[in-house]
Length: 120
Image (cartoon, rainbow, N blue to C red):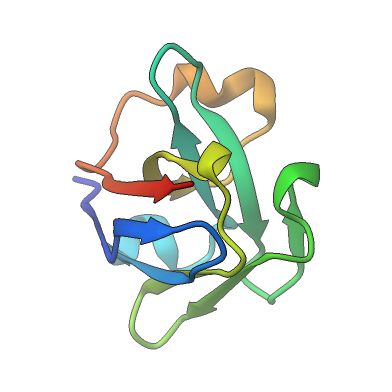
């Protein structure tokens, strides 16, 4: 069974930074591309950033230049360094396998997520 445990969220002022972590079970992490997603109230879950098992990364336009995704394959842990946070980054952040945008709603197993709140 897939296990995903996100942590590191919190309340921060605009311009501040947070570092999120995701501890993943080996069955999902070891050979898969992984990603961070987020869901704001009233919005669909969206891709924030993805990383392949080899370290290639991609980012949503809204976070390029501000967020950095990384992974520690030895620890089965995914990270998201978020700098220069904006109020529009406020959302619950989740990690999971990286899937094409049209398949995000098809993912049935999610962790509890971690809340990020950015005040203006």
